[in-house]
Length: 198
Ligand SMILES: C[S@@+](CC[C@H](N)C(=O)[O-])C[C@H]1O[C@@H](n2cnc3c(N)ncnc32)[C@H](O)[C@@H]1O
Image 1 (cartoon, protein in one colour):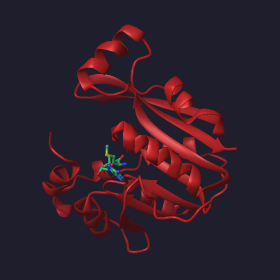
Image 2 (cartoon, helix red, strand yellow):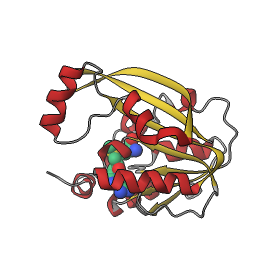
Image 3 (tube, helix red, strand yellow):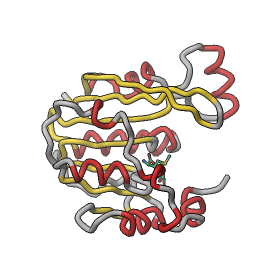
Image 4 (spheres, protein in one colour):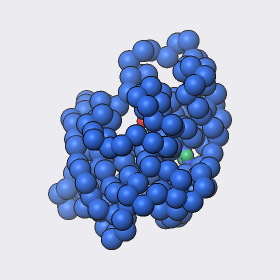
């Protein structure tokens, strides 16, 4: 399977359509009413959500393991939006220093070993009452469909209930927002969950 780095290597900053650089529509809704502070956008890709949050008063850094993505993001957005090459499994932040860990479609794409390590990292870097905002394409809740998907993808199928179970009792679930999206002619549900560290 093509790696993220290979995918990003095919892109040229000047040829990326403006539509692709629009921020996630759920972002504002998901973070409504949350006090702005220090944040990290994990698996920031081209950096559109990092830039949106930075422009809205967050002190944020976007990180990605793809060097090409980080370089594209640095080219695409003004210097005051910060990007760095780093991994979800070793977040570049000190203990209890962040108010927000933001993640669109990164967690769900990691191996289960990395997901566990990332979970520990999120807990380590968040301040008490800090937030983890995860945005992902939610898989259908029908168990039969999930079973087929699990077999096809050979990985866990993520829905709101099993994210809740995975992050366990260390967080309260504050908010869920969702929107419909058409991906390759298929109707999918993009879901944003906001968790607060206890
Ligand atoms: C589906 S893309 C999402 C990109 C961006 N958040 C967006 O919504 O457009 C997943 C991103 O996670 C990055 N990634 C994969 N493994 C990672 C890791 N261990 N740490 C940080 N980023 C990672 C990939 O390079 C890729 O940019």
